[in-house]
Length: 197
Image 1: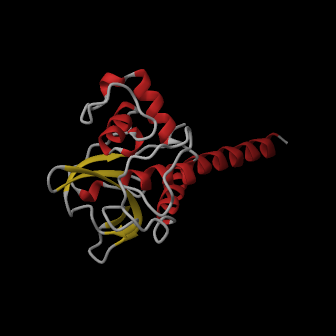
Image 2 (image 1 turned 135 degrees about the horizontal axis):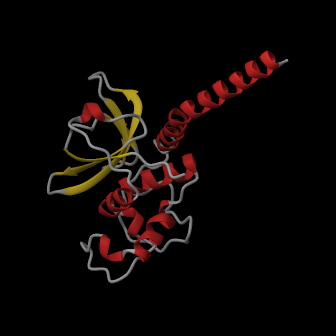
Image 3 (image 1 turned 60 degrees about the horizontal axis):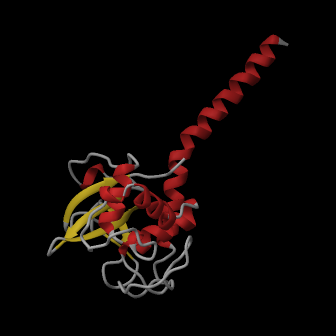
C-alpha cells in the first residue's frame, strides 16, 4: 500500500511538473495564434485618434497600428487588456512615462496604442530581456524596433521561420497585419516577454 501511494504521489508530482513545464510553451502559442488571426482581417494602417470604450476598447478590426496588433493579441490570446493595464499604470506613475505627446494626464483612448508607452509599461513590469542579436528572440517575445526617422515599431515574434531561418513577426507597418521577416529589417532596440500572473 505504501509503495502504491508513493508511486501515485510520484506520478502526480511528475504530471504537475510536466504541466508547469508546458505552460511557457502554451501562452506564447496562444499569443502568436491571436496575432496571426489578424492577418487578412486588419488590412489598413490607421493611426487616427479615436474615442474608445474603456476598458476593452478597440478601433474597428479592419484598421489599426502596430500596437493594435499587440493589444488585440493579448486580449484574444491571454485575456489581458493592455488598454486597462497601461492606463492604470500611467495613472499611478505618469511621470515614469514619456512626454513625447505633450499630455498632462493619461488618456485611455490612445496611451496603449503608442510603442514608447508599451516599452515603458513592459519595463516597469520586469518583462524586458537582454539580447545581443535577433537570434536571442523566442516565439512569444515582443520586439521593438526603430524605423527610419527613429519611428518606434513593435512586433509579435512568431514560431514560424522565414527561408533565412529567422523567426517571422506579426506586425502592421503600413499594409495591415502581416507576418514577415523583419527582425533585422530595422534597428532592434527592445525585447520583452510578458504574461501577467
